[in-house]
Image (cartoon, rainbow, N blue to C red; front, side):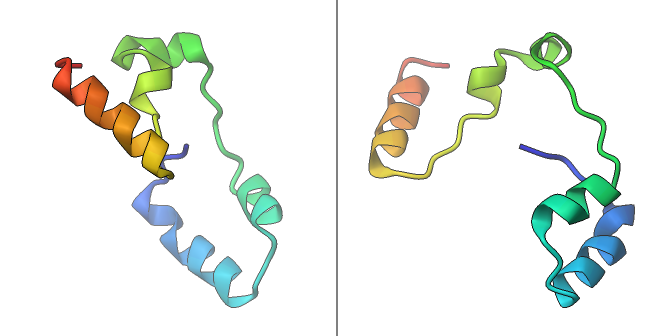
Length: 69
């Protein structure tokens, strides 16, 4: 999961235009990586960054919402 500043859009667009590998692009942006302890102040990192990519993920997300979080 990532959060990118809008100022990085030109660099990301240029990398896409060059068809540059994603890992190289991200490394060049020198991201600041946060650990779970830093993320925990916003809630459970596993829940905060839960992705819905499959029907099973969707069912799990629906269960969480039905339980009220």
